[in-house]
Amino acid sequence: MTFKGSKRLNQLGSAIFSEMAEWKREVMNQGVDVIDLGIGSPDLPPSERIIEAMTEAVRNPANYGYPTSEGSLAFREAVAKWYRHRFGVELNPENEILTLMGSQDGLAHLALSLCDPGDIAIVPDPGYPIYSASLALAGVEPYLLPLRASNDFLPQFDDIPDDVAAKAKFILLNYPSNPLSAIADRAFFERLIAYAKKHELLVVHDLAYSEMAFDGYKPISILEIEGAKEVAVEFHSLSKSFNMAGCRIAFLTGNADAVKALRTLKSNIDYGVFGAIQAAGIAALEEDMENDHSVAAVYERRRNVFISALQEAGWVIPPPKATMFIWAPIPKGWTSRQISREMLFRAGVVVIPGDAFGAEGEGFVRIALVQEEARLLEAARRIGDWLRSVE
Image 1: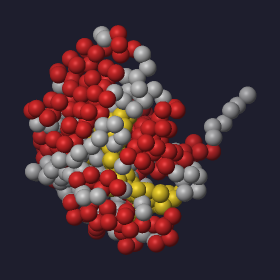
Image 2: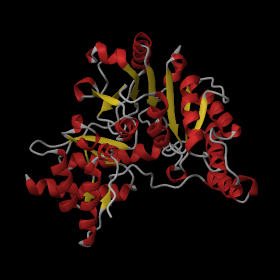
Image 3: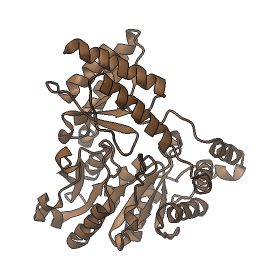
Image 4: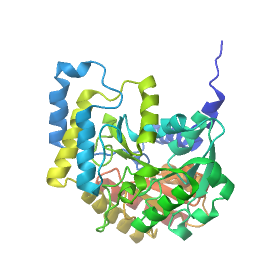
């Protein structure tokens, strides 16, 4: 007997990611040393302080009961202190912070907690795949908001139809951006908050890359904007900033009603984050407040080395101001998928075609700076040799 998955499964994810995984296996089976610059998973470990805090907490028998679904008060208080330290934002740990098993966990469930089937939500194109996938799970209709290089990958609010703005439950944006590596300034967030208030929209901001910025740029929290908590929530993650991607810990902050909605849903479907992981999260935030710990310098050096090497090879790419990604315009004559496939099969380097993140991503590839500098230089050399061979 055969059992088929639900129709919703057909709306999830991008077939391109599965295709890329198959291509990678095929190339590796040929004995090729593949340099994977595809998935944005940090290649560095957490600090010793974080590991020690986790180790100690793992040995504590008290951590082996069910954790609370909203997260320990100690962790939420640490988040509140860190937000005050980093952004000057005051948060109530009781009702304006929710602990999550990674920001993807929260993003995947937010629409289920806020929307009804048939509602509309505004999401970016290109955008991180879970943004649209979460809407499919909830039966919510997406309005895809185009983000284009001609507008510095910022949305043009005047182009959103009035009837869409009137019906939409929320608008989701992400700066610094995955996959675009685009940034937004305070004036943009002020316009966004004003737009949300005008149309009675919730703003959902994904700030996973706030600590990965370069050239003196310092990303802000949307909650710094006056009145933002009336209409906005913000996701944050310890995955990239503290090399804790495998730990699965993040948090939602901001508007108490929206936080409560997600907390209520989560309390019905899981029991929250393992206590030892929360102890490690507290250590990470405390260490950052004490020592201004930052991974940004590592990725800034990698960005400089890689982009410079590609430029010498003839591929000129604008250097991003933030994130662990390069959103690279591809040479003329290729599609995103074609060049990604050829780069893997001919150069042994994995990158992600831009259309994996939406139709507006055509003409780009996303490159993750998740290898040490020597491997990035090797990847650039291979790409350069391949590009010269096809000129």
